[in-house]
Amino acid sequence: MMPYLGPPKVILKHGQELEEEQEELAEHQPLEQEDLNFERWKRRPIPKRTLHQKIDDLKTYLWNAETNEFMGRSGKSWSLILLFYAALYLFLAAMFGGCIFCLMWSISPYHPTFNDRVMPPGMTMAPHLEGHDIAFNATDRKSWKKYTRSMDEYLRPYNDGAQERKNIRCSQTGYFMQDDLEESAERKACQFKRSWLGECSGLKDPHYGYSQGRPCILLRMNRILGYLPGEGKPVNVTCEVKKGAAAALGEVQFFPKSIFDLKYYPYYGKLRHGNYSAPVVAVRFASVQNGAQIQVQCKLNGKGIINDSSTDRYLGSVTFSLEVGG
Image (tube, rainbow, N blue to C red; front, side, top):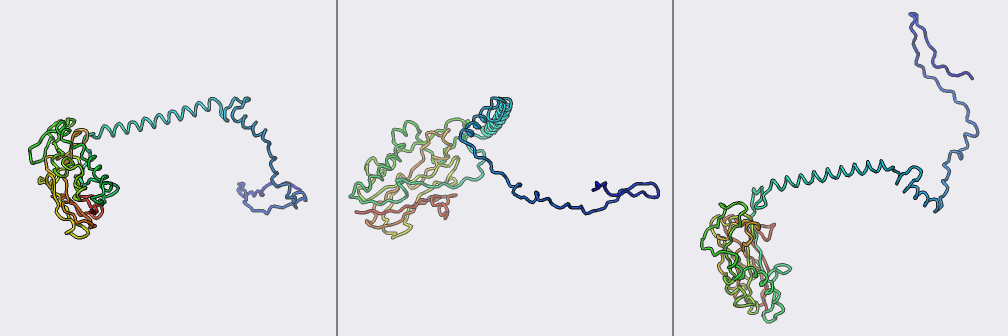
């Protein structure tokens, strides 16, 4: 059989030589018998290795004495890898440290850098034990002891001796502004003595009226740095029945007053106002109807105060259930 020499060449009249592109059908030779034996093309099974061989392979992988390689790499290769990762993590650590430095350098520890909008204050109450539910029997000491213990802990920072040692007595009626001091200077705080809470101070009656069926609660406005509540007028507190018979609540008494005095504001933060004592309004329910289940809501009232939010139950108000048994 003659070998294939490619497509024939054509010589033109002008002496130029060109190759003709032709498609030719390849001539297939008949398959030999041995080519039809497909068994020879199948993958041969890998012989199973013994445990001893596997252990030897592992030892060789960990340390190859012939090539002086550890885990498949030479000492030079391992050195380059360790050098690369050391440089990478040093760079990442330096970049992270630089970012933290720039952040701490650009912000003040005494006040927020950006404070475009200050939310109106919320309100908290004591006693607060697993929710705002106050239910007790005046004749059962165990039923109300947990409430009086919570009140004691809440009022401990307001003891008269502690207030006289760390805070000053203020007589002004307006805001206690101290912006003219240096930024890092410590601000003075006005006294708020526990004895001012009268019947709800726990000094005259260590049971806060719970043993008589006339319970006390304590209300406090949340601290907001730099906030001036009421826009120059004191914020007052009111309490009324939200659910149940309105007459069941009876007389409501406030100590020392039903307002938050402006002299306790603004608040300058923990670093500059470490001795700050937020004012407290004590509320005494002097004639609650025995056995009545009512839901009471106490609200903050004043300019700029929001007390009817449907999404935040603590914004400007606090709601709790009250049930007094005889």
